[in-house]
Image (cartoon, rainbow, N blue to C red):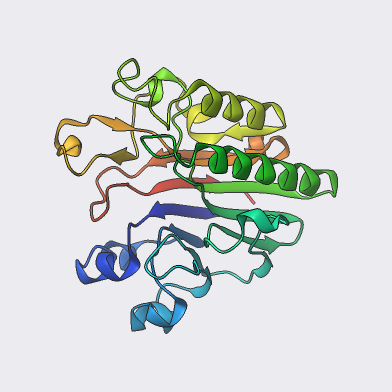
Amino acid sequence: MRLISWNINGIRAIHKKGALEWLRNEEYDILMFQEIKAESDQFPEELRSGVFGTVFSDSAEKKGYSGVASLTQIPLELYCADLDDTAYEGEGRVLALKKGDILIYNIYFPNGQRDHARLEYKMGFYNAFLKKVKADIKNGFSVIVCGDFNTAHKEIDLARPKPNSTRSGFLPIERAWIDEFISAGFVDTFRKMNAGKVKYSWWDYKTRARERDVGWRIDYFFVSEDLSEKIISADMLTSVMGSDHCPVELILEI
């Protein structure tokens, strides 16, 4: 099973750029987008017509904001589009599909903002999500989680850790939550397969950081521990352009 996750920073904008064309020549089972910034009826026609797979989506109530979509080439069922907590509904951040006893979460985690204005919301969302996936595992599911986590975990995961140590996205409290998530039984697939490798998934547009590879690894695929030995490869598709993020990939023997 080949899965691709990508924060596309606007599904209409990226389609207009022609930045989805590379996918026509790719073989994948599930394609998961974050930050689609559109209602499902605003998707480009070829996406709605099934060219890239059957579309599931969860859009934000606020127009042109947030949202996630999963396009699948294999039969999957919708499992949920919320966190069972009304405090975190309405922003289009959660979409989970089910294949037998495997759940595949596509998540766009909140940004804490430079002034930390949404840090409390972000941490609350993190905790509500952790509670939900812990329950999933307790109920006998294997779990795959992908998306934009909006946090770099370790110093190896961003080009300039010290200057960013007080910035949301690399705060001790955010990094500690990823530690807690891993301790709850999840595996960072990229780091498992690429222990000391430096590779990023997001670069700041304003400072032309991608040209200098001054980036952050904030996009992940995690799997529950029971799937750990089924990982074939995990990578960042850094050559794919069109967004301030690059796609991330996971291949599992399922």
